[in-house]
Image (cartoon, rainbow, N blue to C red; front, side, top):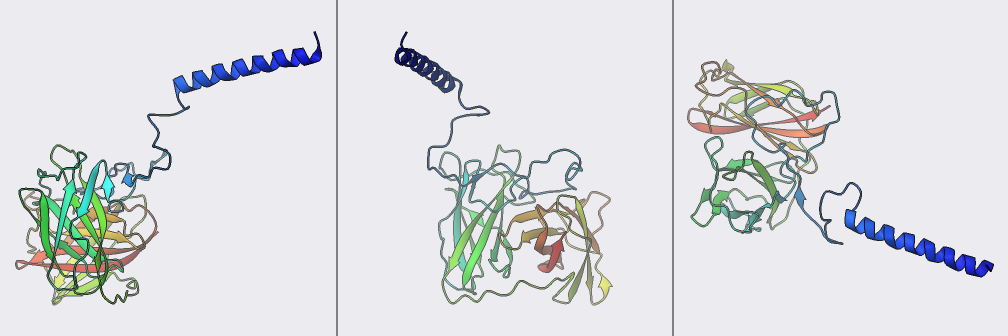
Length: 310
């Protein structure tokens, strides 16, 4: 047989093998694949499910930071959509005013507004608003109408970009979600420098001292002590089924962590002050702003701190 003929037969053989292999590959799918691929050029703003932004009533599981390979979860509040749920600000711009009314909806995976929620710490939805320079912190509780639209007045007297966090548990879901979106307040914005490190905070004659260090990836115990005019406060009010609520926000992207204290009012163990203990598991080293809500004499006050996590 001539050399050219031999080469032709060999090439046809290779082509047959290639076609067969291609057909087999299409039937089996990609190696390691778990389902249909996202369409080419597509984009998804949904994050994998994460506990990082949800409520926590006790110390996180001791496995955090232990041996083995840990899967890093995405902190709460960074995504506008997760697991099919979406935060929809129906008023994405508000005027610079002391009582501008914010309206929002939580859209379910089917695109309809969610109208049924599981109550968490006395409320169906907790809403946090803060400017991007981490000033102007507000923790409020909107009212919902029958069609699923929430509304609440906010203090947006200082222009700039605000970050809004919606913390909620849809009915039928075992765990909560924290979704975040930007709110625009037109006007001349003058961002403030990041506040200096501080472990003490004073407000309305109350002093709050922070003890404990934040260490990324571990259960960090934080103890906050409340005094008034130098006297320990031992009769804090129960507020949202706890003696205090702590929110941590990371510098830069404003990753969100909402932590509730160990114990709760009426459990026969937890005292109403002067100390409130929290266990926080933050996602990474860096600088954080901490905001403590506590109630005394029927008035809710917020103490703020700046700490650096190792």
